Image (cartoon, rainbow, N blue to C red):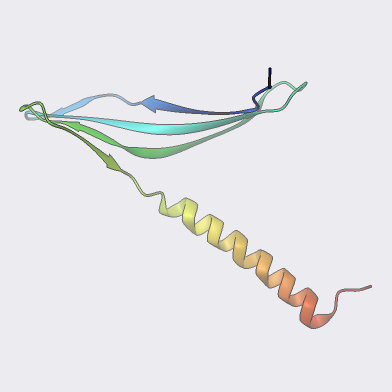
Length: 93
């Protein structure tokens, strides 16, 4: 039996009625638990919106998390900058 340290869950938000259309936001949570320690890390992020119309049709509209993309881009840019500085300026051997 393998232990699982990472878990992803989807949470539905509160339904809201707009005329004959029902809108429900949902978010994805990634939970990382460390073995032998209390607590862990929880990362909540918007995932999308579920839209139900009066005619019975249903649609899932994804939400693009632009902030997360910007954070990852900045992290990669910083890493590449540090690597370039080490190569071109000669890291202290």
